[in-house]
Image 1 (cartoon, rainbow, N blue to C red):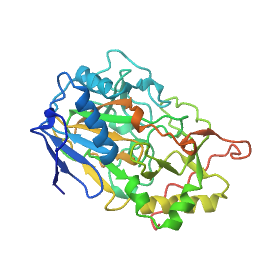
Image 2 (tube, helix red, strand yellow):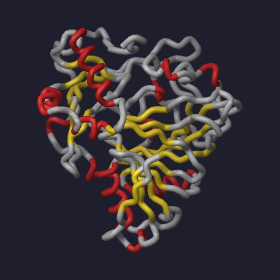
Image 3 (cartoon, one colour):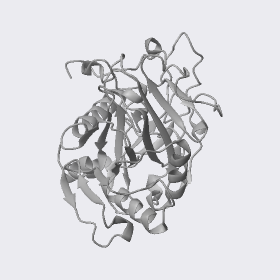
Image 4 (spheres, helix red, strand yellow):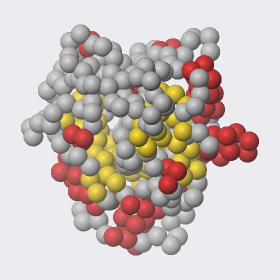
Length: 348
């Protein structure tokens, strides 16, 4: 793993004994020696927001926190988001805790309002009823839910959040959380491709699979998202992608739309734009959903795994360009038939 140290010069006093190291060639910054378990100063918050804007994913080590402390860290960073706003989330339960079975077809999850718990493994969830667990990498383009590369909430109107994950139970094997840098992937494109992609919008919607053991939510109405958005703080542009919510390129026939979306993913889901996070006790991972994608990697069905997630809106990382704003699908842009270019065929 790449471990290139970065200077803390010019940072607040709390960073005097902090070590910063890059974990990937193009993004992901590891932070060691920073204590977020007590009162967090405004200077530390400003620094974390700045680091997040430029590195997209922060891996902060040795933060042995409970749910109340994670809520406090989340609220200090910005405006904490209610997890019940997700279309696919089960109703919130005040006493939700790891060890109780929670499932909604696509995701074995528990909802505690401000927090969501993603759980896998024996005695934690009904593993047999998680149809999207990837047990073999050959299935990675045939699944839905958290096993697919995605940017959260692309089916919604102007929702841009920061995700925060901490482990409640660290898996003994596998169960990594994987990230893709769509900012660096866009920068690596030639100018002609960049200009072409910047001119396109894509219809996004959440289409739920039919699963016989649970009542799934209704499909969401299609919305129009730009294929390329811009980080308002750094000025960098990035591909705005979601494996299972991208329906079609506006103005394109199905075959042409499928081909373009597949091509964009093929240019993004490759080195040096990837990072796979192996969970350790005390990890706190914070990432900007704008400029990245993420997914759950391979899981071992015999191994327990539980992660606690909170979300926050940070004002300096909200898009300001009018082009970046979500639009309702215009008349004629969608005929009521949902298209999707995936799964990819094995030979593609």
